[in-house]
Amino acid sequence: MSLSHTVLLGLIAGGTIFLGLPVGRLRRMPPGLRVFLSAVAVGVLVFLVWDVLSAAWEPLDAALGDVHDHAGGGGRVAGYGLIFAVGLSVGLLGLVGYEHWLKRRSASLTRNFGPGAMSAGELTARRAGIATWSPARRMALLIAIGIGLHNFAEGLAIGQSAAKGDIALATLLVVGFGLHNATEGFGIVAPLAGGDDRPSWAFLAAMGVVGGGPTFVGAALGHGFTSEPVSVAFLTLAAGSILYVVIQLLGVAAKAKRPELVASGLLLGLLAGFATDAVVTLAGV
Image (cartoon, rainbow, N blue to C red; front, side):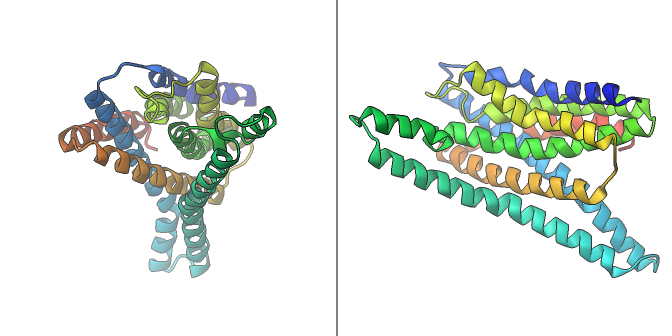
């Protein structure tokens, strides 16, 4: 399959993430429904954590099996183990540090450029960018980043299968990953749905590019080379960042004190994740 066709497949798979983004503009939503939808998004993200960690563990598991069978040495195990640990640590702790920095930056801007500040101060605050965003918007961005890292690894799989001439597998991967991305779009905007901070269409489009664009990039790069260590690195980075977001969203959901809604939403999100993954599994991937 040519590079242009491979890129088109990546564009289709990544573009379906935009289908779930308009949910972020819904208003006048009952509090119970908002809690339920947020829990559904958490369920989808919990599935993604399992999905990416299991995929990242496979090369390390295979290397351990080779050592057991005396078919390989410990160097490969150590290498994959280091990539796995570093990627997971950077993805999780890196976002913890980044979020703390944003909160300190936002607090500093509030003190220096609060109500009644001069126009120059307001201009400085606008230039601060993300630090002036609402917590819901910052959470949406963090979710999009985690999903984007995950989708880059998916794009690599599409590109590699297309480069090998396995058109049927590449097409099936696009269908499966496209279904995945449609649910992931909802996960990105769940913190914004029904809230006071209604996102613009431009903001939603930007989140779609952050979350879905890496599928397109990964497909293009995967067509030219195959690198298992690179896939493991991006998968573990994604797992760490998504895990951080899951912790944050569960904390918000717990404050609602509606355990029946949280549990049922989580269950539905998990089942949706496994249902869409079934298409990819049918391809033997």
